[in-house]
Structures are given as structure tokens and as C-alpha cells.
Amino acid sequence: MSGMKKVVAPEYNLSDKIKTHAYAIGTAMEESVYPHTATVLYPREKKKMPDNFRGYILFDPDKCISCFNCSFVCPANAIRMKEAPNNRYYPTIDYGKCIFCHFCIDSCSGGALRTTKIHDVAYKDVDEMFTSTEEMIEPPEIIREDKKSVEYVIDETDLHLKRKKERDGLFVEAVPPVEIPMVSQCVDRGSCLACKICERVCESGAASSVVEEATMTVKMAIDAEKCTGCGLCVKECSMQILRLVRVRK
Image (cartoon, rainbow, N blue to C red):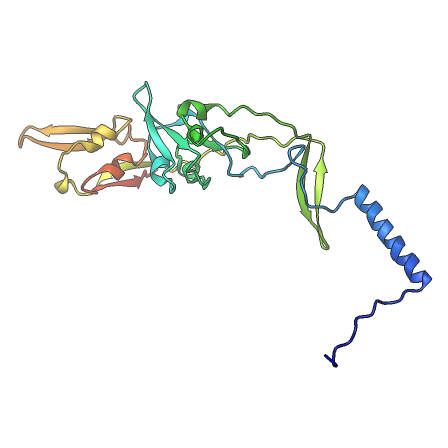
């Protein structure tokens, strides 16, 4: 204990005290006019989100080709396909399982699924988080209290908020999907079992069974003009002999 020194408070002269107090008062006045806080006053303010923000998902049934890609690619098993009155299948989403990876939107070849900037939906219970196809077509009821949008700005010295007296739009224009013409083809006709699974799952009527009268055997044929390249028959083929191939222009 003999080697320890007592901490002594520093002594300031009058000029140092005046400077210190003046600096503190100046800092307080600056913060009152141009605050450097990184806190967003939600819900009166909302952070401005980028257009590719992964939020609540909307669905356009007119663009859906019932390819099931969204349900197949979903890693959280949150998407289930539901049969519609027009004998097509449309997606439903369980937001209790959804992790908002948006793989479903990225894999949607028809652009039927699109993102929004809606991220604060409230539910009464877990069961209500299951969203049917009909509920996906229109956005949920929106009650907004925000009057300003806030952006984080990082300069050379610090991070601060940039506030604007405007509301950030919650809906963005969907980017048209990049269309790569592809059709389904059988790469090994000798291994075809003629199980007709491809014919049953094909929504466009491109896959059909043909009876060869000479041998009285059933062979499957795919009409390239009708094929939409959804890949559903490729996924369901039990012999894995169907492939998607690019259409040569």
C-alpha cells in the first residue's frame, strides 16, 4: 500500500474555469439547434428505407404462372400454395415463420411477388400472422403518425441524422424480371416411365401424352410454344430426365 499515490483533483484557475464552462454552454446550444443524436423519434419520424428493402410482400395474381418456385425456394417453409377457384395455385405466407430473405421474390419469374417498405405490421396473435392469398393482394391497413423522414449521414468526422419534412413512400415500383426464354426438354426419352406427372402439373398445357400406335406405348411430348419455362415439371419428374434449356434466338 505504501507505493500507491492518492488521486488529487486538478486545480483550475479562473480563466480555465471560464473557458470550460463556455465550451459546455456552447455545446449545449449547438445540440439544441443541430442535434448530433442518432436516435429516430419513432413513430413521429421514420428512417428512410432503400427501394430494395425487404419488407411486407404483396402479390399480383395476374402475373403468377403457378410455378411453385416461391414455395420450393423458401428456406423457412413459410410459403404454401393454395388452390384458387380458377384451378390455379397461388402462394400464402406465414409471417410467423418468414425470415424476410425475399428468395421468393428473387425466384418469381413472372414478377408476381414484390416488396414494400412496410416493416411494422402488428398482429393480435400468432394465428393472425398467417396471410392468405387474398390478404397478400392488398396492403394491410396503414396508420401513419410520421411527419419526417430521417437518413443517416456519415461525414469525415461523425455520424448524424438528416431530417426532411416529407414522408418516405412505402411502395416501390417493381423491377421487371429479366426474361431468359427457357423451355423444358426431355434429355433421355428411353428412361421415361410415362407416369404423366409432368402432364398433370403443367399449368400451361405444354406437356401431353402421345400414344404410338405401332408399339402401343405412351410417350410424353412437350410443346415448346406453350411452355412457359416455369420448371415445375422438371422438379416433379420422378426419373429426373427433364431439363430447362435456353431458347435459341
